[in-house]
Length: 269
Image (cartoon, rainbow, N blue to C red; front, top):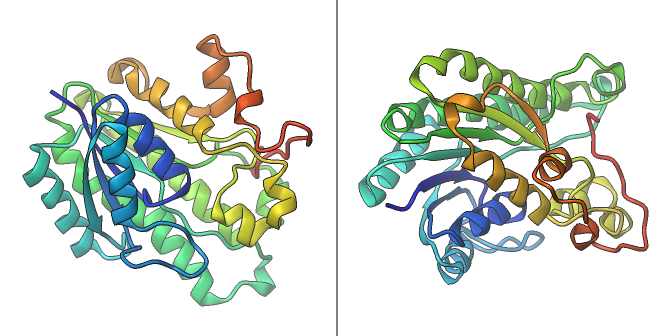
């Protein structure tokens, strides 16, 4: 029986790359994202992502879901279970970014990051847990960085750092809370910047994109983690490159947007 993965923010970027990777194995994918109609600056909608997933070999359920809204979360999870009979994997991928210091951070931006990154991760996980309990190899994978008190990040982007570390704390907390149920909870973060809309539009434009890797490197690492026995693989902060190296992969050139450019390390590393 194919696995069912509930993926937040799966209409583009890393979320969609993970969806396509799992779809190639025949998995059912719930595309839980906000983008129902085309955005002028962002490619893809839940419907175009669903079409790609089905072409890749999976079954797709596109669901409009703003993870700031608990009612929408619960409705999306219910729709997933109704369509596919359960949930095996949760990917907490949806995230908001704002790279500013404290004096430059508006309350609206602070609230957006914490409502999506921390609160959203918490309540999507809460909604999925009752169904993950029935899965044969249940995994929660959260796209957030290793926990650290490194002042480079807390002292530079305090509001954003708090929200991303908050996601990681949710993940590690769930690993302890759900250990007896055999539900794995881990984090995954890229070694380098990844060529996503956020990198292009908010971080460094095309110059940084050229120094980045493609989202497929994160998807390949995620697939390895999700294939591991849940009871034996939980409570970890994974880095994509490390996961792949441990699996015997040594050639990373195929993941570079432009192999002639040096790679830019990601935030928090």
